Image (cartoon, rainbow, N blue to C red; front, side):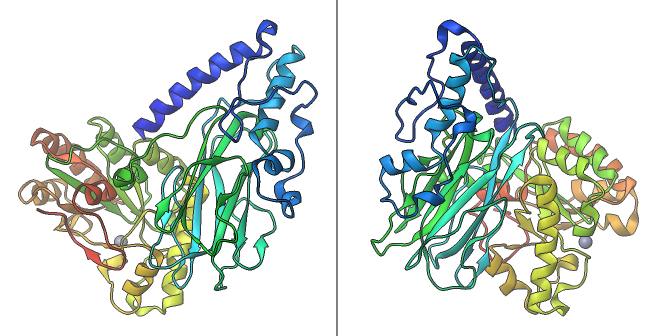
Length: 462
Ligand code: ZN
């Protein structure tokens, strides 16, 4: 998340420069957009933000050439033309892109179902199956006065472009067997003037190039399906950040810096969010540390501020079921519902669901492992059980950690108790003094060989 803030600051600086240009009549021709082909946006004196053409739904029957896209789709040209129109008329810039905006998205994979919500600019793919549906939402601080949302279509093998969907509506055929050959993603309304959305797909195991603002991503009619997708929203004219594929898991959970050669541990807190999390987060903030919070879905709604603070700190949001049942005693459908309901509640605050999962009581029998595997989750257990819930004694919790901790540990604590927060305030500075990096579960996994869906993971000790 620190990187994100840095990026945001540089965007703000860039935006300030753009606005400075846009409001100066002498620089009315300053190019503030980049066309879908990567070239500078075309000037248009007449087109304003309101003149943006119809959505690419009207382009369904045209060839997928860049020219057709430009004339019918919600291309960057219209966005930059809007800004240009405002600038050339001498009026203040007619759009606001001074706020953070990002995309979250998920794919439905044949035989395995919906994957996790992915944060912006991350690679979502499976090579063992193929996607049949896609959905996306926006996350960020879009002001109520700024119109627009994210819209998209998928090209389904054999039937062509789907209807236009938006705001998390699935596009495609979740239960069908026809794979997706391409996707188109764009922003509409005021957002199209201030932001660009980039899309990249994997086809045949290879990631292609970025396309933007409603251009086709994928090969249509060649018999190839896409394997996955990657989407990034940027300020108009900016480029998506480079994200090395090997680092995806680290960025996935907040982007804190991790030195893989140094010792690291994952502090984890179950059963929240709850008020003591604020003390836990303050103790982590003091040292630039991070943790993973496995949250109970029914507790999420009451604590949006805590979840936002977790995200700002680069902490990882985990799923701990909706109502804390023994999942091994439930049907596969009930297990799935417990997980999905919680992800929906988290996504309502965070913009995306949980990136890791821990079962209540560590109970992973019954259908649990196979459901988790289908949903792309490993089952995260622990290597040090502090028993903080039982002792409610800070010094006992502190010594259970400091007397046993080793590189690669996953440490189990709970969000609910003041005594735990007190223990964290004591142990965190000492753990840092001993040289441990306090990282998220996904960061730990990324540094130590990764996580395999459907398996139990208790530690990453070397
Ligand atoms: Zn629990």
